[in-house]
Image (cartoon, rainbow, N blue to C red; front, side):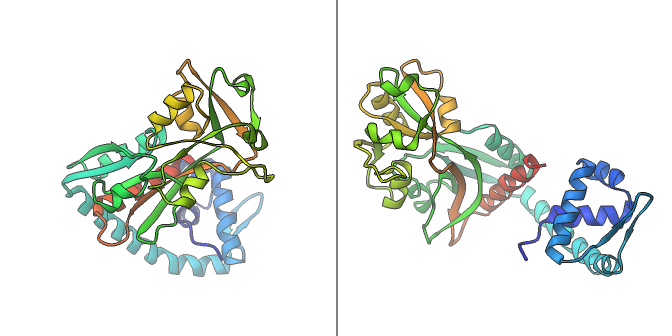
Length: 301
């Protein structure tokens, strides 16, 4: 059985009260089909039907009745705990310092807005994190949490919500032969000098951002090493090498007339994640991670 999803439990509780998929959807602000999907997922986790559905009525099965009797007080206790935590969160003051690699997209902006609603007394400071030092600012307590490119394998850091799965994009000078292509394959990277990242970042992380060979095993030429995104883009514009970027960063810099951004097919998608310290994390960092997680859940509905 996979991990429980709170939305599945909420859908079942509301459906048990309404005994009508349409009205349950209205209360949950989702479609009737979404309520059905959540219920089927919950029944799949449990392994038996909880609801009997006919053309005329909706009712609970005996197992559904038993499950409801046990779930309702547990859910109410959980809701009370969350409400207490939210009340405590609103009393937090001070500053939440968030580090970012790349740009703050619309998704992260919504998560920040949700955090500000939860913690109105807490100011937010945003700092850019160098590509060559993705985890250092969190460890040195220069920021409370950071939004970084995956992978993350650091034992002293907690990886929170993972989001923004997007195809990778190749940034090349407009003078480069690939600049006029609608897309390129991962094997085409064998003809590019990929700009890499200085070795202050962990090797596994650097190799993920600038691989040394294609999926087919062809070697990829090594280009200059940089510390920051801006350094990499400047070298790209000068045709000193090419650079792999996540789609949101490419879109943000898409107006640069000296650089072309070409989608790459055949590489793993890029992903972002929220990280914070495992030992003595700032409480605001956990609240922000929860805000990111909730924003992700809302976007999926």
